[in-house]
Every structure is written in structure tokens, then in C-alpha cells.
Image (cartoon, rainbow, N blue to C red):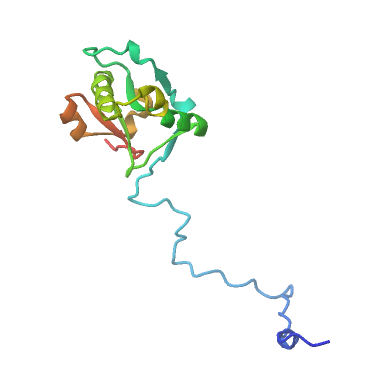
Amino acid sequence: MAELPFASLMRSRKPAKARQRGDAPPAAPAAGQPDLFAAPLQGIAHALTYLDIVAIGLTRVDVRHLRAGEGTDAYLYHVTTQADLETIQVRGTIVFSPRAPLVLTERPGVPPWLANMMEIMESDDPAGHTADMPVVLRVKRFVIDELLEHDPDRTRRYGVSFFLLTGIARSE
């Protein structure tokens, strides 16, 4: 039978020297350099990338109960499509990031946001586009307040406060 090319190398190696009871343990690394993975990172803010919909109390709002001219309340609202709502429900989380934040508004911002979405939607046959139908979700503001940033562009456009859920905790 032919011998494998590495077999001769394996036989020629000397066995590792076993440590005997009197031998000193192997030397530890030099004690001047700290363990980089043991300490928390300095200057880097922790960012969330998702929130559990049950934990934050995300609920669907009946659009018929929202009226223009009503004041703010203890909730923030997000307008999305039926297809996006189904994705959120299946996943059980809302996913966001600083690069793709979730847009939220106060109650008076919902009617103009809905009106803008309805203008954008195709006007041919709304019955065939149930996945594109707008859906309004709400969450208690105090639950996510520290993770919000103001959105000056939408606030200026609609005249109502809009926020971006970026996941980066504010430091005040």
C-alpha cells in the first residue's frame, strides 16, 4: 500500500514535552496591555435596531376615529401600508436604524400624512390594491421618547412635529 506524502512528516515530529509536576506553568501574557474585549467601548453610543411590538404596546388605530384639528395626546403615530403591517406582525418586531429610521408623528400629523399617501397611491382601482392601503399604528410616547430625534424637514412641510426613531439614546 502506498504511503501518504504527509505520513513521513507526521512520524518525524517529536512528541510534545509533557509538563511535569515540578515545571512552572507557561508564562502569562505581558501585564501592561489591557484586554480590549473586557472593557466597554468608549465614545460609542449603543443603538437599538428593533423593538418588540408587544413590549412597546404597538396597536392599530381605526382611521375613522382620527379627525383633523384634534390636539396631541400621549401617543406617537406611524402610517404604513397593509403589507408592511403584516410583515411587522409576522416578525413581531419593528426594525429601524440610524440609516433607515422609523418616522413617527403626533396625532395632528396623521391626517396630512394619510392625504399625502392617498395622493401617491394609484387611482385606478383601490379594491385591487389592499396591500397598498394605508394603516395607522400608534405607540405610547413615553416608551420610546429617549430614542427619538426631531425631523425638521417633515415638521416644516406639514406644520406638525415629526420624529425619527433611530435607536440611538439621547444624552441630555
